[in-house]
Length: 322
Image (cartoon, rainbow, N blue to C red; front, side, top):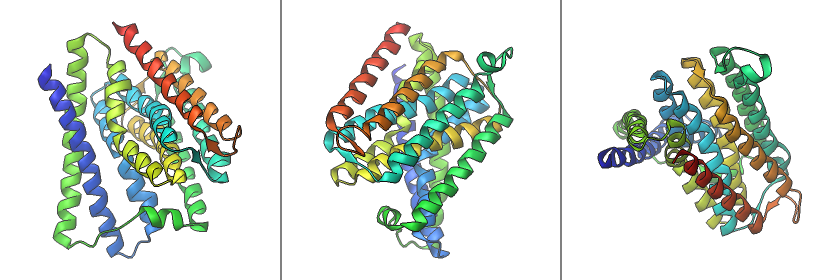
């Protein structure tokens, strides 16, 4: 099992480095064709931080490991919301723009509600089994396209935030090709290592793939968001710290689950409803936090609540398996 753990860690590292190199190469290529920093930020960079989850879920969906698929996305979203916002909010209180408080965070809540309705066929529609089918995936992707259009309109009116985020290096054609092809190869190989070794660890420990997906895999694929938000918090750029997390959560629910289920319908276990409830509750807490105390700000004590609640919840999940 030690080898499986080492290979899992190696797979996560390869995933993250692969995503980073692919983003740098693709950004340089886009810049060569005179594509704006705004467009690059909305597409290449945004996709890059979600690429690890997307690749892991693609492998898991194709291989029929439904608990890894839902565990990775719901676990990543909860990790983003509770752990990353908790840590960054302790570093510095996170004050955000009105659009984040009034629009983006509520949109992330709508995404949770849409997913809940689509996956709970037994509970809501009295079906024999629950599944996220291809039609459901198509609906999620339509919502994702609408969200991208909304973000484009928002940033077009004030592109300064994206201009700060996106620095595009000058590269030769050969270097661009090496970065893009090497990055994609790293994503594919890293994703393969993560899924296969996560399953092996679960089987060796006698715990469910759900728990591995919700904890180890989810935390590992969320490392790009963790790094981005902590750096943003240290630089006192709260909008990027919060926007990165909220945007990533919307990407995960709409794009990644949408793409995964269009590729292959995914059976849904109602046991994941608890994780959806936790995610919804945390999002409602974040909305309320924006309008209590100092308006449009996540204070340190509120960040501490997020962090310690999730640590307690994760401990409870693991103890249930032992």
